[in-house]
Image 1 (tube, rainbow, N blue to C red):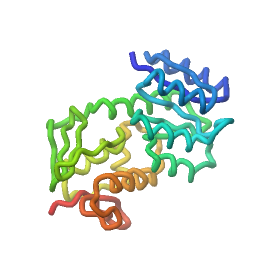
Image 2 (tube, rainbow, N blue to C red):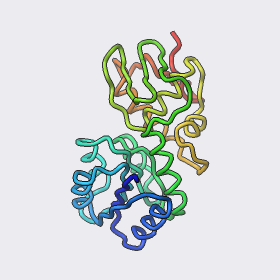
Image 3 (cartoon, one colour):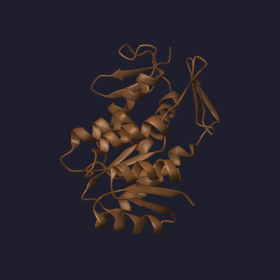
Image 4 (cartoon, rainbow, N blue to C red):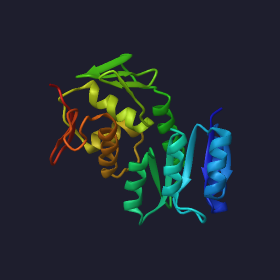
Amino acid sequence: MSTILVVEDEPGIARLVQDYLERAGFAVVLAANAGEGLAQARAQRPALVVLDLGLPDRDGLDVTRELRRFSDVPIVMLTARGDESDRIVGLELGADDYVVKPFSPKEVVARVRAVLRRAEGKAAGVETVHALDVAIDVPRRRVTVAGRPVELTATEFALLVTLVREPGRVFTRGQLLDAVHGVSFESYERAIDAHVKNLRRKIEPTPGSPRYIETVHGVGYRFADA
């Protein structure tokens, strides 16, 4: 049974999320503030963290940054409707997905399941995909660039696999969202830009002049085929 850490200071929301996750078959650990959440993340080693960005003792973006210093645990952010810029910053810091308040608890469960599927590497297709000097061992979630191992979040990994499987194909942001999220709820397309920025920082020799992931202006992205 996978353990989900829910870091949320509003008791009503925390209990609601806990109830729905437990009904879905997850074990749930609750934390009411950032300090407790970070301590539980270290102690419990959860399969995924549901993290509220509006915590009383520390900004949720700082918590995301701190989590990424010692763990690649998948993170689903809970954020207020007006925090559009915070959502993008959170994704750039390494969060995998977000849910906007007020939310349906069923949506939280669906996004948790989708992110965990990505984290577990349950991608369809051949076991190894490669293009140029990027190689991906899909079942083991291992990525190498010119022989150098690269650590990716679950969402970054799913995005890269999608692009590398079809070099030269232009994907719209909407198509990439569908490919990596695996759920039908509306998502913010600029989230893809944040994930691509992270990928470029990790795999490109010169992120500002990308060799692998090319921007197709006004459309989306493609993986270079030559």
